[in-house]
Image (cartoon, rainbow, N blue to C red; front, side, top):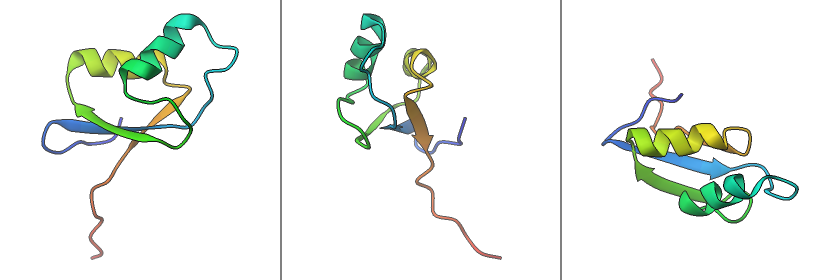
Length: 70
């Protein structure tokens, strides 16, 4: 998983919930995602990480930290 700052994690929906089990659809809604490429910033805790694990094939963790060039 990507490193997070401020105790938050940003997730983006990259897959459709069509033809998925109901619990996966409900998990996406619980994460605040309901359309492709929509992002949601959530607290980084075990409950959120568990939800991300449930739909890991439909979401990706976004690393919004600016990269420094050396």
